[in-house]
Structure formats: structure tokens, C-alpha cells
Image (cartoon, rainbow, N blue to C red):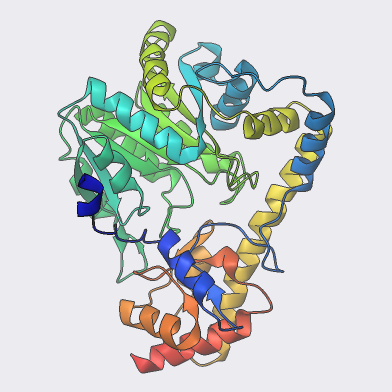
Length: 400
């Protein structure tokens, strides 16, 4: 039997860390690895706007029949309005088509499978570093992988010149994965002028941008966080976008996301999307309904939408406040390192600058779980664990 020949697969870099955290019996343990938002009590909350929408759906829903392959039309319209703005030329000219997918990960995987059909010999380029699951998603679709520079460990910022040099050498027909905002894992984002230059390179070189947009609203706000996407689309006629409602709606377990393709004409978009639907049909057939119905209910109702936008603002403000407090508390402990860069980063994640040795020290000696490479989930820090965390980091820095 072939199953008897299998050895256990290595644990996932992030989810495996969470399993180890769960088995840790220390009372003061802290999980800063898993990428979920937590409030100041350490709970990943259900948004009140989501609760209200679910109550409405419970009272009015009459069927659990299958959805169409691409999802409900109103959901797709709401996705595009958030991505581009409801009055954007791409929307007016019907140059975008959207599929409701099982989370942003589902959007990435469907997009990868679709692109493999039409660009079988392409290479997919990802940033160094990138989300740990990106290489696996595209490799599973059969793509060759390559990397371009992104993070400069010396400056704790962007290696912009290295990035440009690499992108100028990407061959026509290849695919470049870009993070729209709140770069995971570094928290370092591109400026509008940098997006303009990258758009010009993409247009000149002829490679295809694939944009991962998982954190809209958690960087600056819902509109400014899409500025990189819109700036890039001023320069290129087509792209793919995987977006997610896990973070900004708190719909993690509902797996609510989308894949949107943009083409140069409505006819091209429709033709391409027919192939996306065929791809979906053989993977999961049609999407899960509940999360998409929640999103559509909220975004269709003026009062619920205002409540949701207020909750997104509160999430973003808390994350920024935690960043500021973390830097202040580390400085107060007299650590011999400048952590001010953490305040400049955006979104839930930060490249802390901690070495792998220091990460191991924190896990083994202090019960503080951080992803290898030093990425921390800032949203996992609370007023209750802040002092212990900062004391422990100060100790880890002294340990080497």
C-alpha cells in the first residue's frame, strides 16, 4: 500500500507554530505568529456589523441551494466597488470580472491554475520575503518560481533599487506577484510614485501583475489602501487581483474572498473569465455562500456599512497604537536598538529585526511564539501582555 510509505509532512511555518503554542502549558505564553486580528482582550471578535447582518440573513434566508460558479452578482459588484471605486472606468466599461472564492488563498490558487493554462512556461516572481504560502500556492499549480528583492534588513525598509533592477529584467509573459498594501510579512509598503515607476516597468517589459490585496482598510483607509492598485492600472491594461474579507470583515473561518481579472476590453474580460469559471468548476464547483451574503448585506445597507467602516477604523487605530506603545516601551527599557521603524510599517505585521536565535530564545525560554525570520503579528499584542513581551525582548537582545 502506498500510504504506508509516506513520512509525515513538515508542519506549516505559521499554522504549525500555532499548534505548538496550543500545546504550551505556560500561563504567560503569547502567540504573535498566526495572522489574525485580536482586540485588547486577546479575542478575535465578530464585528457588530457582521452580527447584525447575520441576524438579518437568519430571518430572511429561504434556501441553501448552490450558488453559481462565480458567485452572486451583487457580491461581485461590491468587490469591484471596493477595489476600484464604483464609478471607475474599469467598472463602467465592464473590463473587470470577479469570482467569489474561498478566501484570498482560494483567489490566489484559482488565479494560479488559470494562468498555468494560458502561460504554461511562465515563471512567477515573488518578493523577498513574501507570505510563506505564496511559493507553495504557485508551485502546486506547476509554476517555476523566482524572487525579486524587497526588504532591506540593514535599513528596515524597502530595497527599492534592487527591486527595480530585478523587475526590469523580468521577461515578457512572466507573472509578478505584488502586495497592494500592508505587505506581509514586512509591513513595508510602496509609495504612489514607486507604484507609478513599477507600472511603467510592467508596461514596458510586458509581464503580468498579480496583486494580493488581503488587508484593505488596515493600512491608511479603504480608499488610500487601493491607491497602488489604481496607480498600477493607469499603466497596464490587464492584471489579476486576489482579495480577501478575512481581515477587514473578520470573516476568517467563513473563507470569503475573490479573484478579479482586468482586461483591456469588456469582450476580452468576458472571454478570459469563462476560463476562470471552468477552472473553478473542477476545483470546488461553486463558492460557499454565507460570508459573501454577509458582505453583500452590509455593503448594501447605508447604516450597516457606516457601522462596518467605523469598526475597520477602530481595528486600524488599535494596531497603530500598539505599534507606538511597543516602540515606546522598548525604548523605556533601554534596549540598545532603534525600533522606531515599527511605527512606520503598515498593517498587522512587522519585521521586528529579531534574529532566528532571538526568536528561538523567546519561544523556548519565554513562551512567546514568533515566525522564523522575526515576523510578528502586532495585533496579537495587548495591554495585558505588553510589559512581559518587552521585558522578554530586552532579555533576548542581551542573549544575542
